[in-house]
Image (cartoon, rainbow, N blue to C red; front, side, top):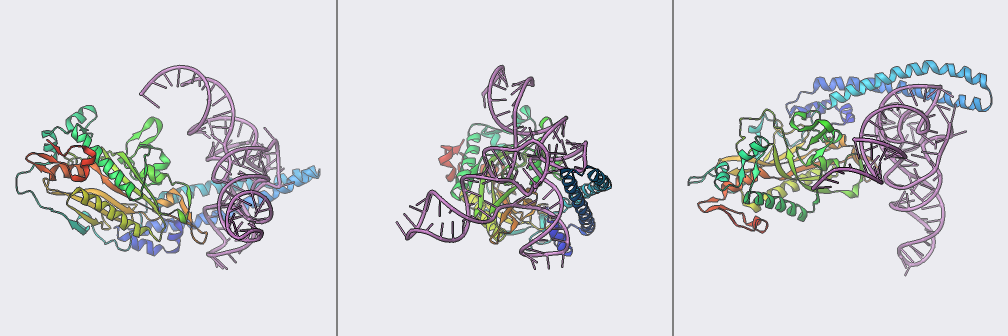
Length: 423
RNA sequence: GGAGAGAUGGCCGAGUGGUCGAAGGCGCACGCCUGGAAAGUGUGUAAACGCCGAAAGCGUUUCUUGGGUUCGAAUCCCAAUCUCUCCGCCA
């Protein structure tokens, strides 16, 4: 959520920035400002009312103490009107608070000044590319055929047990999966991230704080009986560690990483690019999350991007880095880099990581603040990124490392798999 | 699932209708003391919102949350949530 103070101080700037996201905020902001003025007006009246009541109450208490019963009783009558007014003002205020909040959550985060305008994915800027991103010259199989051939991932079995999008990893497939998780977690630890194992199910407050609610409700699995949500990413529980927290400037940077299974309903996305491991309802991911000083957050974003890239380099996969344009960047992000691996059998770029700086947008909802050098309260910046999402990395490895003899295990994973080929 | 107890500031903990944003302690910050440290000692130590704004100052709110009683609620009543203990069940 944007800060009301920012909107109040410079509404036209906010409107201008949001245009980059193809979002016309003019009317919304006008409404917000109008209600904001009313709220402050009402608040003032209410405060005065309460002050009056407080004074009367004290006087009455004093009179009783002095035994001036009659005077006290007379004074009681004076409070009646104040109380009636108070009730009215309270209702008015809470109505308006609710209303402004409803409008505030409709405003996306402002994109960083380096974010270009653009309609959608086609306007994203490729900022880096490395590795052999060409098709195989010899016949090659897509991963959904290879996994069948070597019996390492079973989609039909998942359908039987649960439904589409819940594959069963078997034998060396399961071990490979576990190897990737451990490789990612160990690498993150080496880079100073503290490992965290979070809950996979969160309450409403947590889902709201990181922005999944209210807008992305349909994307999450919901446990009705307990009113809990299955996490769509470890970002939700891990970031919520810092909900309602006040840090010291010296606490930065705060670096956490977590492995978790992720659950996404992917409502409405059937039919396109969903074959095999490309889009699942349940998948594994290692997430990195940082909380930073506002002055440092962009430096940190670059570092996180570099870290994500290093993982793909070590796995020997061709990849590229995109800077998302205004049309493709997420609602809550100010700047996002996507990492994509090239799948040489599908001849397609597959997104395996999305690394974002949310600036204070999440922190505002989280109430994640810190005392700066001058002892002033400020919102911290939050960042997160996948490092990495497993299924598409797995797909790329399976496809890119296929040979007539079998699927060769990338060098860095062998200490974890204890085998070097899947055949 | 059954029975009971509880929820107070960063933490512990006092407080059963008024002057309580809340004693005391711990912690933390700064100072004194010390060659340096410990101990000791002094001072300070919440946040949100508003008053055009910075500082100062002022006002309101906040003792889990939401309602209620009352001129006045941390304190009384109701509900929700959470935690703990015992029993049952169970990885």
